[in-house]
Amino acid sequence: MVVVGVDVHKRSHTFVAVDAVGRKLGELTVEADRCGHDKAIRWAVTRFGSDLTWGVEDCRTMSMNLEKDLLRAGHKVVRVQARLAAGQRRTARSHGKSDPIDALAVARVVLAEPGLPVASHDEASRTLKLLVDRRDQLVRSRTAAINQLRWHVHLIDPSCDPTRSSLTHAKGQRQLVEFIAAHTGIDARMASDLLADIIRLTSQINTLDGEITPLVQTQAPQLLTLPGCGALTAAKIIGETAGVARFRSEHCFAMHAGAAPIPLWSGRTAGRHRLSKYSNRQLNAALHRIAITQARLEGPGKTYIAKRLTNNNTKPEAIRCLKRRLCRTVYNLLRATS
View 1 (cartoon, helix red, strand yellow):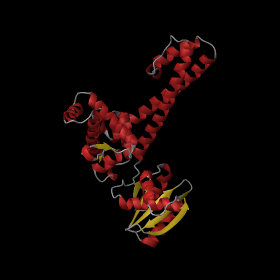
View 2 (cartoon, rainbow, N blue to C red; view 1 turned 135 degrees about the vertical axis):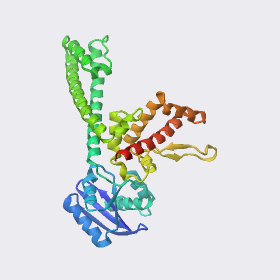
View 3 (cartoon, rainbow, N blue to C red; view 1 turned 90 degrees about the vertical axis):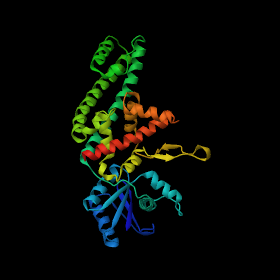
View 4 (cartoon, helix red, strand yellow; view 1 turned 30 degrees about the horizontal axis):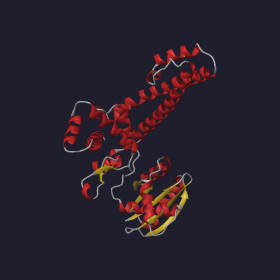
């Protein structure tokens, strides 16, 4: 078997091929376009045969077109997290950093880590991911505008103190429009501009909500039956999973989500574990929201937390255990809909 590691950039990609023991066999740099991708595929197949595994550093948009062309040509593609490649470079006998060195590190990570997620491109999950990411961006912008607006309103009249939640609804926005219209000065002007931004952003967020919910109901309605998992959380899970079939098992999925426990003990602290910080943080956050909700509401989640606490687990440890259970449940629900 030959592994081809790829270091991707906006304008060029560098490929390094290694054998089964990590010995470098050759390298190639091509333009980051369809012609360059075809040239790299011909080079690899001609020199090393068809039994190839391609390891691509997970750079999202920069590696997307390359992955699609490799998959279209019938090749196996796995994704390598940047921190794994960086760790491989640090432990290498030869030091330095260049595109060939980075590609070589990616290839050797593929050899050392057989459980890496396989690349796949599910347009339905990608659509949800882009919609949710755009919504998150709009929510952050609205929150920043609300914080600035409340400060200007305080300077106009300290007795007027609109809550943050009221400014995301039409009634609260209308009341503040009337309040600002009755005042003059630079603070009133700034408040008026910020409120207009908030109204516009709220309209965009509501429009996205109206698109996301039906898509989730179509793609993975079973997720909505999970207590604590609403449409937005389900959309985040679907988008960040990017096709559950690319994971060999629910343990691989848990590793990707950062819900698989890793040992953290020495001496008398034997048996302690924590969750990995090197994972898909967005997917991990979605699972955490479900776990926190289930721990608060009556049901199996709260019962499980109570059981873990009686076994001398701390509250954070119990939440981590619940996240691992939820990860298994989410994986099975996604498999049922795939």
